[in-house]
Length: 405
Image 1 (tube, rainbow, N blue to C red):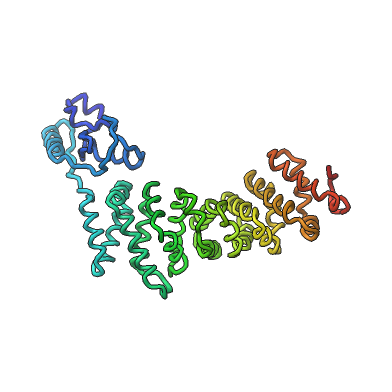
Image 2 (cartoon, rainbow, N blue to C red; image 1 turned 45 degrees about the horizontal axis):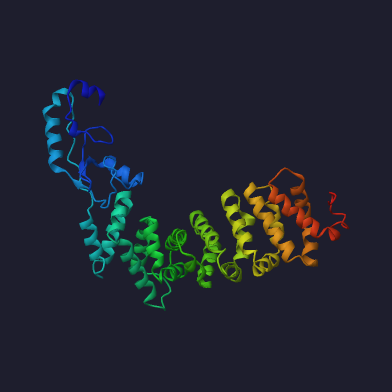
């Protein structure tokens, strides 16, 4: 570009204000400024800027208008200056437009054209970030959620989801909706229940994974009222996804979702009552991945703040042992969560049997180690409180190798 400018003077209005390169596909923004398509799409969709780089005005319409006149002028200039080493670029392929997307949405309402239109919409949404935002701006999310709801909820005797519902869900997930779009989606009264039914009925693992990952995103922007009114079936299906080990991505989404919702209302009790603790302990036992272990322990910490959760932990043959084993073996976050779980059990459910079991399983030894070593002060304080609370029983045991203070 530098060498070319020294030999040939390039008209200034041929240059993109962002890249300062010759525009190959000039497009005009709603603010009236023309940019090269690649540069302005990167600005708007990859960098997620919502204003015009030149005018600083907020961009209210993200559709870009091709400046065909300027593009032809630049191409002609390139041809005239070919002898100076200027290459003529080909005419760019026209991108998808709002009008085309709206037509496909309309066509997908027809039973005869539904699957073909949905497949085309899926191709479009997977193409680039700009297409995702265009589709969201014309109300695709609302239409897709209606397809899923109608297909799933209209026939209560269904034992699996339909191909149309599966395709619509895949598109809806890949749209990667904005926070506003997600709020609108969760604001539809039946959407959480619909996606719960997808998790229950979908024949393929893929749709179940999309459902839980979409729910995870929705609950990141949910209002408290929407979080406290969750049905026990919702928790049952999350537990089933953890049990089935669909994929690492689905497992992490499920754990993040549980972390989001368990602190609210009676959700930790609902989770405990559908067997979440048993499944989480089993998963923790075999888990070798740091972040997943941390998330499992975080969920267990939340659930064990209820009597039902602690009872479930104690009913698992390896509950206390598995949790205490993770102290100092995963990360500082995991260790802190594990100590918090043991604290909840020792303080609120520490009957004679539990106190004896903690001694026999080596939990007391681990707590004494926490007190001795250099670790977080909160964790150390909780360990000290547990030991102090039950020291009269534990002092008598030859199993304890450290002095209790």
